Image (cartoon, rainbow, N blue to C red):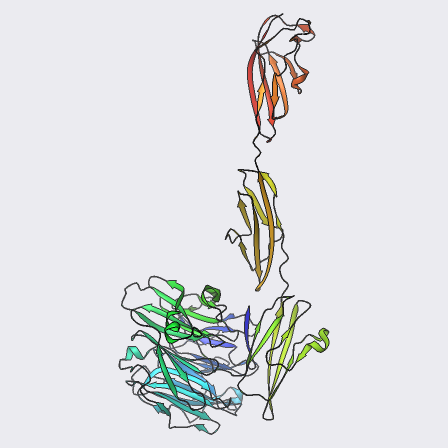
Length: 610
């Protein structure tokens, strides 16, 4: 299990277009997303953005046309922004070196003369609820595509605003500093596919968390382009076309380690188009290897429209499929293939319905990853920071003494008891301190035991089950079954793997099925001579094998019971009520149980001759 942690909590609260009444929302404060249903009604079915303060408290959110404060009311001067309902992206970024000023970047529908604009929000105004200042709908470039990427400068303070002018193959990077937006862009000429149709200018622009890559999903041009980005100079280069016809791309997102790319795709021109989420391994090597690394991790067929992909503060990637009541989730996006654990309809929106859009947030270079949250395993910490002079880790485990702290870049720590630990990292750089903290939950590895019959007979169905079944568990048997119990019919060693919160317990059980078949032979004579000469005086079995117990009944021709015994070898001496029976034929029944514990009856006639 892998987790992506960051210092600030600006991305804790999400609001996004909810179809059929009011925006949908998520709250990541607890570490697990919970649905929010108190959002204002969006006019956009695509672009959305929200922002919280460093403690995770909501500040405001927008659909690109209206700005709502934390009370879900339109912010002062917060109406009539230049975004549009069918525009893919709107972005919120903090002004560098300011704790109260934010810029909202809006894009009109592709090719619209309104173009790319920004509006400034001052959170010191209206008693802390915020106000859109007179710097509203300031034109940056027109006409523009609907794509906006925001990337931190290598200095970790300034911010690049990256866009593609409509009708060209150029990409422009605008630098936002503490003094404001520099109006003259860094232009990378003819590096991208020229977007000359409004439909092809639709789709997401995303940057990698490490600030070194940009990806562009181009809807009707049916392509995905991957670029190198120099976050010092703002230059874009080395375009790589990942996708071609017949696929049309819309949503796009990087894994938290920047090594895996995910795309939402639809087959162009089909009336009931199949759609996919695909994965590319950006560490595959050559360009051709990256292109060929494409793996489909989810498929839908029919009238399904895939929307945005957006990485959450927990490092998982969330996916909106239009008109669904829940979000799909890629739970382990740093892992390749099926190990990324794509789960459909994982996060229920509590009555809200998805549209195309999800919010995206500014990448933060000062982050760290945590891998392994299981007791008894070494928990690994990996820092992702561009600039630092020194580091100081506190693992929140005071019982470990001097092992509770480290100055290493990528340390590890062994927690000795399950529980919640507040882990802090102090990053010292140029006289300032950046503090990263997060509660880490260490889980007990499941203690499981398989129970069942270890020895039985061939042909029997043997049920193997677990002595305890815990909720939120994943089961995997050596037979590939995924249920808490299984039935087996062959001798073998069987194992079951139980996963709870990413921690795996395993138990093995040996089943031996023996050949329990035996020869059943119960042979009775046809006559006997009870004349006291010592020869054939008793009616007893001639042979009896494979019988555990038996009971015999003797009847005359009128159906009167003359004799019964629970021992066949007691024998019938031809008498009833201490009187000798006359010569003739008598009827007998034997009720017996064989050694396989199967009950049965045997019937016949015996002739009595004196």
